[in-house]
Length: 220
Image (cartoon, rainbow, N blue to C red):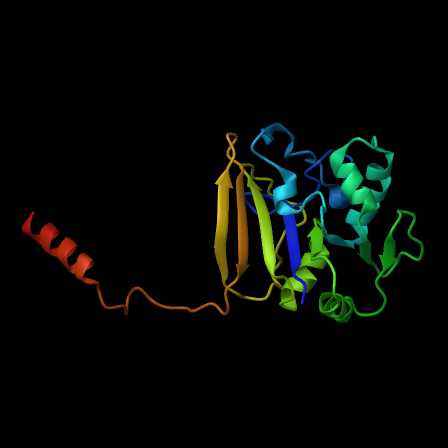
């Protein structure tokens, strides 16, 4: 079964809306579009996290699809990201779109969760979600995402569309890779790691190291 990978840019307070420019997604009166612009450096390679769609099939929500459809086909053919995104097979989750104009695009029919389960079971390249916050939330709730690539930028936005909402399914994640850019962007890769295991420090037995620390403090 092929993997479903979700990649997104996020602020420190979890906002993922319009990182690329002021006009990218102003819905809800969002006025801080383009907040990622000043933090890019040479160590930040979008291909490492699937942001260019290379060797993957794309799964996109309606809003992200429309942003990409209006932008990437108009870019020069020598642009490597434009080349891979334009060529990639694309699946679009939308209740309102009836026609798709970007080449190699297919509208997912019916329930999106069932459609993604069917896609994962098919042979082929891994499936890549880019942006598409509402879609990520739906797939996260259904426990269908196999890997998260989250690039956290050192900004606090206060309002906007969030990566995870209050309806998110509680679950544990395991960090498998992390890198920090010279500008402070934390590029992290997580995989699901089962259920959250709550506990209490108040009831936990102190370790030998903690007992020794307490003894040293008492001597002082």
